[in-house]
Structures are given as C-alpha cells and as structure tokens.
Amino acid sequence: MLNPVHLRTLAAVLNAGSFAAAARSLGYTGSAVSQQIAALERVIKVPLFERGAHTITPTPAARYLVQRSVDVLSALDALEEDVRGLCEGTIGRLRLGSFPTASQRLLPIALAGYAQSHPSVETLLDEGEPDELIPLVRAGELDMALVYRYDLVPRAWPRDLHQVRLLEEELLVLLPERHSLAGAGAVGLDDLKHETWVATREGTAGAAFLRGLCAQAGYQPQVDYRSNDYGVIRGFVRSGLGVALVPALAHQPSEGVAAARLDGVGARRRIGAVYRSETTNPAITGAVRALRQAAARLGGVFPGLACAERSPTAERSPVAEQQR
Image (cartoon, rainbow, N blue to C red; front, side, top):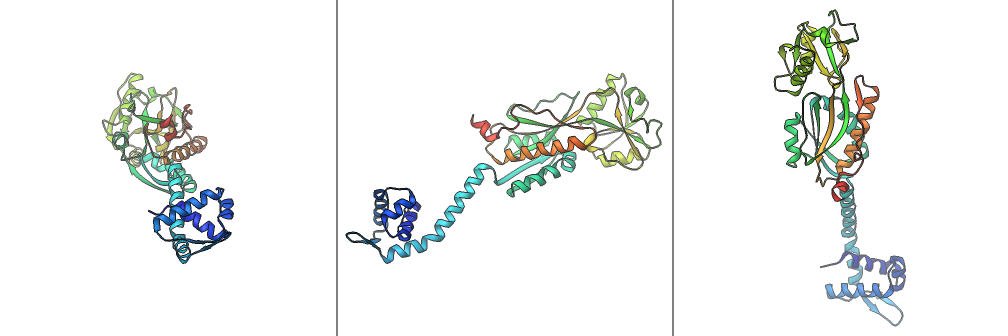
C-alpha cells in the first residue's frame, strides 16, 4: 500500500533536486529521505531515481507518480482538516431539542450566533416538552435539549445528564384590558381568588404550578378553560373569559390584554439545557456558549427575565469534561 508520507517525500525530492535539499526542506535527515524513497521503490517494484556518484535523476515512473499523487494528497489534506474540525466541534452535526417558547425567543438569537461562528455544523431541531425530549437525549437521538422546570413542582433531571442553567422567568398575570386590576402593575394572589382562570392542560407543570401557588394563598383556582397554546390563552383573556398566569418568555404585548407582575411571589420557571454527561459530540461546546450569550442578551432587555447564575463547570468543554 502506498504511504502518503513517502509520496510527499518523493514530491519534495523532485522539487528540491536532491535528497539533501529535500531533507532540509522537510526537516528530515538525508538518511531518512533515502530510506523513505527506498521503501516506496520496494512497494511499487520500480526504480524512482537513477543514482550517479553525486547526482540523482528521477525516472519517468517518479514523475508519473508525483503527477498522479497531487490530487490524492490534496484530498487527504482536506480530509485531515475536516477530521480536525470534527474533533474541535467546528464541523459536524448538532441535534437539538427545544420547547415552543424557547424556540420562539431564545433559539433564534442563539442559533444565529452559532451559525455565524460554526458555519460548517449542520443544526437539526426537534420540538417537544421536557418529558418528550429527555428520553431522546438519554437515548442519543438528540445531542442536547432545552428544558424547563417550575418552582413548587418538584423535578430532578436524570443523573446521567448534565444541566446548564440559562434563564429564570417571572410568572406574569394576564388580565382583560377592562379588568379593575389592569393598570395595577403588580397584583397579589389574594386579589385573584374569585377570578376564573385560563390555564394550560391538566397534568402539565404549568397547571400544577398554578394550583400550588394558589394553595399557598389558601384557595383553589377556578379553571374553566385550558390550552397549551399561549396564543389561545391570550385570546381567551382578551375576550374577558378569565385571567391567566404565563411565564415571561410566553408573554407578548397584545391589544386588549394587560400584564401584571405577581406581588410577593419569588417562584420562577427555570430554563436550562441538558446533555449526556458522557457526550462525545464536540459541537455541544459551541452551542452551550451560544445559548449562554443569547440568555445574557434576553436577560438584559426582556421584562421578567434574568440570566441564571453560572454554574462552576458551565464553561468547560463537555467532551473535555468527560475525559477528566
């Protein structure tokens, strides 16, 4: 089998005109160059040089071999560069999962920055709730997923997943524009005990959070309308059918709907990214960095959002962390 190193040495000898000059250009010894050429001659079973007392003359076989190997060696160089990029996370594929409100507000900023700094990484997106995405990450079908959890709704991510904290969201009360509390700016839970609520579907973390929050105030919310589509929820509030509690990322200023902060409530929805602790995809490192940068931008300008506290290992390379 032809050795690419020997082919490069042969080309260097033809360009330099002698073994000694080729050795100087390659950083080899003259003996090493001579041995590589001899090894190549043994493989192809044809002499490559006519050797005189003080000169060498390349044979037609040598010139033919160098001419034919140019494209092959260029292709090999390109492959080596691609492999280097794959190992560094600048080439490859990133399979990402996300939930709708993060896809709408956080991901456009993060992926735009990521695509600019990693143009050769193909990014694929799948959307779902955390209960749907977590098994896909653990099975290796997704490299990373954006997930959320609510305070008051206990949840722990599997121990084989690493979490990066990104954002903390306030929960905002949506009120019909003509509601008596619409201009209050901040309302207390006691002020809402007699209201009809529009909430997410039964069994969701959002619905459980609303029940837990109202239970702390000593009552059960009267929920007459349910939808997991925050656009539908806004529409019901706009029509005067009830009030709603939505995370900050889900709030969009809308005609006919007023938003108020919850007075005296410190509970939040917390957004993070999870990936397998034993991940081998270097592209995750750049994606985590892009998500953190996007979270910092949103947390600085978006009402009700704060960039989450950085964990001690947040900036480590996931692949490097695995190898420690």
